[in-house]
Amino acid sequence: MPEEGYDEVERILTLAKDGKLRVIISEWVVNEAAAAVEKKFSLGKINRKDAHDMNFAMANFLEDNYRTKTIISYAISEKVVLASRNIIKQMHVNASDALHVLIALSSGCHYFASADNELNEKIKKSGVSMQILDVHDKKLMSKFFEEIA
Image (cartoon, rainbow, N blue to C red):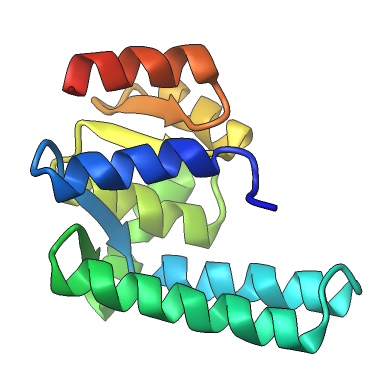
């Protein structure tokens, strides 16, 4: 069963495939996704075969979307890690979230799509010039899709 927000992410990717927007992620997203699968396995929520299948599907999904440039992935260099410390101090976020925010800001993103309510609030309070897209907020996402389409 797909997780909450899955349909919204699919619609965002469809818009990217249609050339209406760019989806930018940091390489770290791949590690976080793999860790989420591993956590589900370690908690007994999925079996080893399901974990393997999910990781395999994720790898294929990313490969396809990187190849078509539907998703643009930014490398996590030493320079990025060092610069992310400023985001940690400014927004009081963890290192992973700081990397995502820094990549978005450095890439000139107008929107920041996330399902992390705490991070979303910290970004809003920081005064940065990105609009937060909470993928769990159906009303907000509907408005976004109307504006982009």
